[in-house]
Length: 356
Length: 204
Image (cartoon, rainbow over all chains, first blue to last red; front, side, top):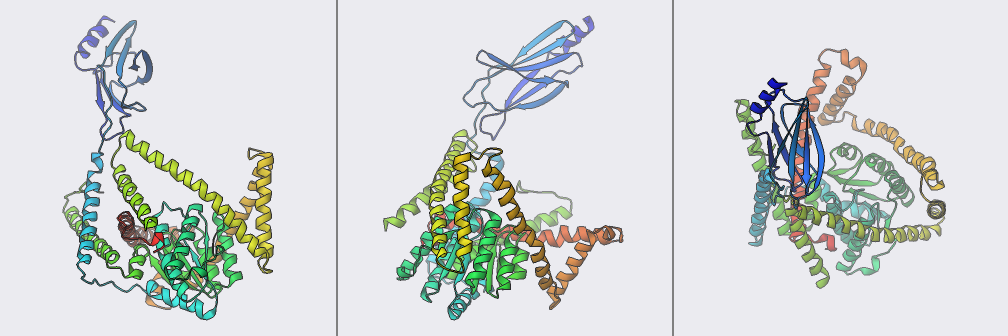
């Protein structure tokens, strides 16, 4: 026992308890580091002291280590107490008063922040460039070129158009892109006096889709074409919605079906039913897993970013077109960076720039 | 004019704050995010009411059309029945509402989902017709992938390795290519909306 005591005294001469702030957090964590170089204790516990309250937070099983004490408040002040038991002896070590710091900027996200700034700068540069009146070339996208043809076909056949704005909510960018395209298609359908049916799954998307259709008819001077019944809430059940839309395609005999936005497992049910009715179908989604189903069953498919480009492509607005140029420039930069880093990796130089 | 300017101003202010919020771990930033979520739920619950009105009106109008009437009648009756059962008996465990959900709605949804297997067969038939070089390539690749996941495929030398290569190299490369494009496209769409360049969501 005497030997243990001597060892304990020697061992505990250094810093036994070290409390550090965890960087880049919301001020709810502290890092507790402890070091007891010799196996001299029978048991050891760490206590957190806040005011007069003391809470046992961990039992130490190793001589050296660290752990994160979570669930703290950045406004609080804490002390930590390490109690070591050796036979009948007890030794207590207390830290000073510490307070976790809440960060105002997550430095681990700095590379991403720089990339976002670079990308925003590129987009703004091209928008400014477009303001000078210089025209920009856009490569033809078959699916978007066929939009007018698809609306025209429905007009010739005297049948309605079905527009499905995906099954996701408005927090999905694909849904916003789908609603942007809805505006163009409604205007085109309005010019030809063709009925457009928009069954919606999400209540918020429903209210917005309704306003878009109404405003689009107003903007072409045909408010009389708007019917409250054309944009409707079907159901929020995924397969209930698939059943409803499939039934609509068969009973209404829609001539043209648009599937734009975010889709899940129901994509094939919708598009295959549409294909069986003989309707011309154009789909657009950024859901990689659903793309093969649309490619197989639809006449045209907008893949990934083409869905986002549709609005710029259809409106021919130079400002919107400029953003596509910005995207291409950023893709070129990414391609170069990936290429250079891959070549360096082949030579054993591993650089990630904190991005991967 | 104000009808468009006010929403655009709101989008500009809250769009920029929300973009910055992502990089700020401070509790005040989290508090802002939580408040925004609460607002979304609040606005969403108001939209639910409008959606229900739309649902009932849509089916009521269709009750007068012979072709649609049976389906719309079922939709309205089911809606009214479930609402009534929910109000009277509650929605807790063992309630009629819950039983209707588990023993009627869930099997109906499962039925729709199971239809996928048939649709998959017909879509595959269309996709795998070797009409062109690309379609032939797709057919061969699909055959290899399907064959390699069968028990027999695992014992054919080279097949599991080929599957691994197909999934890890060409498949992953194309997926990542699309993912990069989608990410850039979604950021660009968000910025276009925040800066008011894209206004189609306001009806053009």
